[in-house]
Image 1: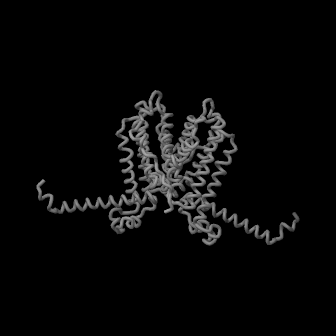
Image 2: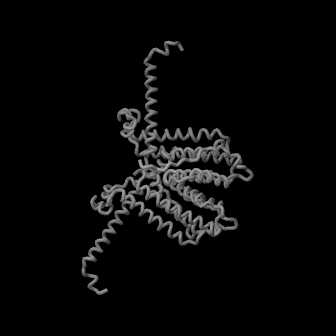
Image 3: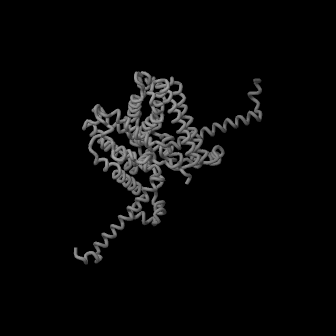
Length: 241
Length: 241
């Protein structure tokens, strides 16, 4: 590229720069919105509150998200992307069967653990929107269903490769694993109960114990690097803020 | 009692009648408040909203509940009383061991099923108040803990009478059963998924299958009258209201 191409400010480049800056601003607003929604719920989110917390003008925020609903849906999508990055994609690099299934569960557990102080948008959103039909609920339910379907596929593959018993009902097993995650979120976040992370993991091992095919060494197949050394969940007592 | 005692309006009797009427009014307000809280959450409850929905004056409602907080706590207590009446007390009449434990779980499942269209105050309250310290959260957490402790005692008794394996960890088993209830509430209420009730029951049987002591016929001990004929959970599609 000739040197002058770097320095001259062509209209195309200026517009490209503007677009880049716009995207950065949008990402910054979205991050603040996600933090707000995790704390106060999706319904606690509004263009006004967000403008205040980012130090922007209402019209500035409005330029990026045309409505409160669009803002809420964008936050749900952003959460979903982060969830996929942290839980889904890394676990998919594990071999099919129990290694992948254990990685999915362990990463899910860790994700919920990290969220003890902020709250999981999927879980709180489900309660917030369970009787509020509309596009936000649809977006939320769609993403929760997509995640459940992915987990169910991983269970199905574990049956196919012979790690789980052939009569395993993937939807039933998924229901039970999801229950462990919900109980973890409830006990650690609401009751601030110590040992919840260990209970969720023990529940997973017990569930596997039932569904694992005869002759398969589940412990060996699910010995994830780093799991044994993972720090225990730190539950800080809830302070009056 | 002499007949005139029935008809004359002594000041004491008038005051007693007034007290009775006051209690009836309070009970009526509380019922409306419970319905409102189940729909809109405890945080959706206010003296103003309640006055509107009962057709009373704000000062009339205020005379019975001195503050919004007192109102919220009274609603939590009322919910707890109903929960005990429907789930806890009838199950306690079953013999110790698996019959009582199965009755507790089945009645809990049914209670959540009935609430599919209104929501369980314990579950929604946990999400609403998980990061809002104060007397309402304390009341809610106290009652959830009391219920969990009762369930854990029932599990402990089932170990004592030899129905469950001696190495059963009651807190762990309770965690797993609670997870099934949370998954039922989530799937039936938020995802409107068919078959959730059956999944929760299948999960219970599978969990029992693991913890039941050798030689104990769990099916025979948990064959509750009416369970097999219980109507399946009707999940109505969520209408736009």
